[in-house]
Image (cartoon, helix red, strand yellow):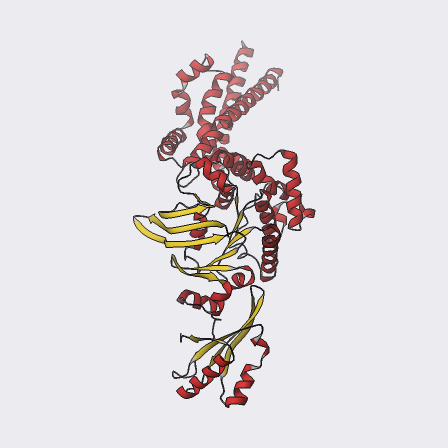
Length: 334
Length: 184
């Protein structure tokens, strides 16, 4: 696999009124060609800074960022501009030119790359077709919905045939339906055009829906990185657990009882596991919360259950679930 | 009204228009680039340069704080150097222009500052150079604000008032002058 981005021990320090603030602390990671790579974290965790080091909109304080083996830090202004033309970016606030028509917006990166005028227009119209907005070509962005504006931004990003697409909270300003549509479009572009996509988000649902790999950023640190399936079923770091566990509205009914999280994939989900538990062991659990999600195309179910107070019962139930092939994790009490 | 007065009003209006229009055009020719420089060199902007911004800002502030009549007197030698005279329609264009340049520059600067930083970030991410970003992203986005500013900016309003007073005085004086002559 070819490496698109490689970050080695990247740190970023901001100075504000003499106070220093570490936005990124020794982050190392690698993004490979063709991947949809998610970067997730709470707001203020440093994920926006991290994605901006990839096209050097942010300079790193320490460490190196390379793009296809080329170290970005050493490049002069002209060289970095050339690199940036291969790294497209879309934003939460779309950032379209309000005074230019849709087609003219899409033509911008081609104009920067000095593509001849006739070719620019042809390419722009082709890109609008890809995002399904060819009939809006003469409209102005103000007359489009948020989802349509983001489609225009995607068309603009694709126009210059970039090698990577960076998405900075691209769906955060959209409603759930539009978010779904934009994510489907991005996934489609990833498969049909073999475009590497880096997605910054604070929503686990975005990562679950389209990402292959995910990096979890917590307070400037890289808490965990890996396959989405792996992190979803078995989160190791505190930050990952926080994101993956369904928000549990209930506290355990007494301090002796335990909460556990069961994760099962499509196959195990067809077994009536709780009924079997009751039938075979006679023990009962209290379901606090349950849902199913599609992670990387595979259906996953997860459930938070409260075990009875008795320690022996607890072990018996856990043993039963483990034999049934379920993935089990302790849920820490809030 | 006698023909003389009508004639004087006609020529007065024409001369005033000549002065204000040419002064405005010249002020924009100089003030627009100056405003762009003020904007682009200020802190955190794309061509951030503290010394340049400080010097330009200082010059603009000094010129702006001078009352117009004092500026007019101060500029007499310069006016004479440029137009060969210190009185008359052509000569008056010089102080009017000099007085309006800093006002136009600040107005342009404030209009450009309204352009969303996101647009500039997007342009930078596309690999555009700072000059390209100013010409093809910032100026087009600021166009409505620039036009609106030219029509409604307070500074411009006051300049207009000043110019109007001078215009009225000028018409009155030329009227008086012609009246005196006519009386013989």
